[in-house]
Length: 349
Ligand SMILES: [Zn+2]
Image (cartoon, rainbow, N blue to C red; front, side, top):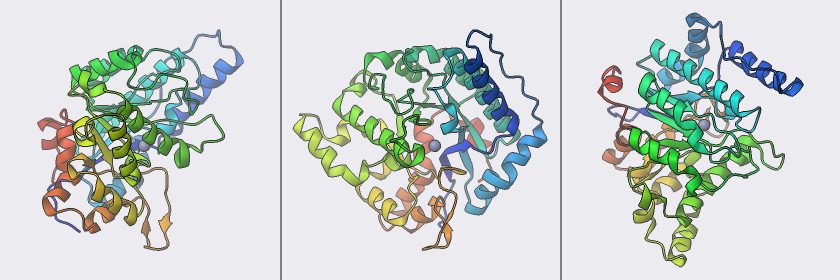
């Protein structure tokens, strides 16, 4: 294993949640389906600390130990956000319940997890509606980042692009709070797009092109976005994007986007990571594996889990020692500036 200071996984979800959390959501959506006029209730979950420990110890925490990951930036299950389901009020209550659960996890395991929140987005509702929950999470509960769904309609893409003024109040608040966002879609209600195999990667690719076409960072120079899943098709098609920027009279991608946009390493084979580390500057790459996530099996070609991304970063010939250290941890500290001394000092290296 490569000797590094600290390994921060910037992309992990609570995909092993106790049944009570899923039951709350199911009951909420069933109630709305039966009678939308019935009042909804906030979550009052009877989940013990031991149940939370039992959901994490054999899963995320075991994998962290096996793979030498020091800290995971941890958020609610992405496919579970389901912004296209229910109503605005159910989205509010659901985000609140999921974020409170993440806070409990980080209180139980401050050395393993730092909190990243889900927002109560809803298709057709202005993103400024999410500011109250974002402020609650960051100011009252110490969250260090948020997941923003660029397509709350669930693969129908009915809301404006993220460069539209529609989104501006949320971007203003994120700048003010100094929290970055991972631009992460949720489930798909469009059968043309498999959630993790197509909708996720389409979303990653779509938001990069939206940013390329727009000039968002002229208005928000300190806003920071992470594009997950290795940036979708972007690194593989870097030449196309450089050429499109050139044809549109934009500055180079370095100047136009790479002061504000980062890519994670949730790419599940060596050749993919080699491509990414060859074309994307190392300062823009954050280590991530999305455990326990989209692909859980073992690659028969290597004998290791597909999502054991540390192996690919260790093995790629395209990073110097200093660059590798930056990808593994230093870059995340620069992007998630609220991962302050309190979190990092609590974490044994
Ligand atoms: Zn994810």
